[in-house]
Length: 379
Image 1 (cartoon, rainbow, N blue to C red):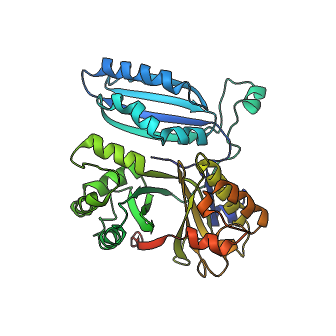
Image 2: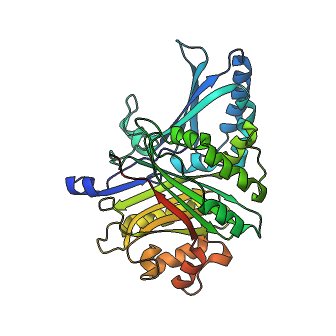
Image 3: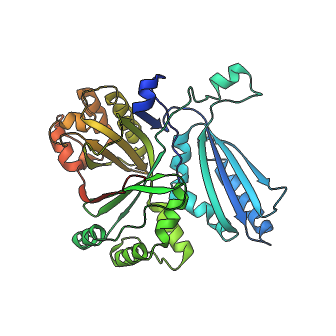
C-alpha cells in the first residue's frame, strides 16, 4: 500500500485551508518501514529468505541501504527499514513482478505485514554538505486533507466487457464505517476497453479499510462473479493466489492536487494514458507537473486530480467543472503546445495525439464510468 506525502505549495493559511498538493516527485529521500510478524519457529527460514532478498535488493537502482531489526519485547516481531534515493525508483521496484517473485519465499514465514513509506524531512549526524549534495531532504512540511487515495487495475477477457460492467455497476457497497478511525469515502469504477480501474478514497487506515472490504460477503460474491472473466487467473480461497493478484493489481497514487474546498461540484472522470515501454513513471511525472501548474490557475475547470501509475499503466482521475469536452486542453492539463509535444514522446504510439489534436487524445484516453459511489458525510 502507498502512503502519499502531502505538501501545500505556498505556506499561507488561506492555501493551507483550501489547497492540497501531494506528490512522490519532489526528489527527496525515502524511508520505507516494513513491520513483520513472523510465525513461531520460522525465524531461521525468515532470516535466510531475507539474506537472499537483501543481495538482490542491493543491486536495484536507487536503493541506498537497509536494516533488519528484531523486537526486544516480542521475538516474533521484526522491522525492516530501507532507504532509497527517492520514491520513484522504490515504487518502480516494489510494484514490479520481479519484486513479487523476490518476496515469495518470505511470505511462507510471515503471519502479517504492514508497509509504511515516508519522505525524510530532518536528520541529525550528517554534515550539511553531504545532506544537500547526496542526501536530499523534503524541503517543507506538507498539509493534507486526511484522505488516502488508492486504485486497483486488471484486465478482463476480450468480449466479456459488458458482462463485467454489469457486475461492477450492480454490486452492493460495503458499510462505509470500518471502525472508530477509518471510513470509506468514495469508490469510482471505470473501464477502458477490457481494462478495469477501481479507485477508492479512505479516511484513516487504508490497509484496515481494504481488509474490511474484502471480508464483506457481498464483495466476495462480486469478486467471485468476476473470476471467470479475468485474464489473470486467481483463487480467492488460496491466500497466495489472492495476494499475488491484488499485489499486481495495485495502482498507487503518485500525485494529487485539490483546489478549493471538498464539494460535490464537478463531474468525476478518468483518463487512461498507455505509456511506451519503460516510460510509465516519466509519463506520470509529466502529468503531475502539469496538474501542479494548472492548480495555480484559479480559472482552471479541474477541481481535483489524482495520477495513478504502475509500470506502463497511467490513469488520471479528475473532477472537472463543466465536463471534459468544454476545454480539452485544460482537462488534459496540456494548455501549452510544448506540453502536448512532450507527452507524445512518452505515450504508446497508438494513443499519441497527431499534430497536437487534443480532442483526439481526449477521445482515446477517456474511460467509461461504471459507477461512482460517495459515502454519506460523517455525522
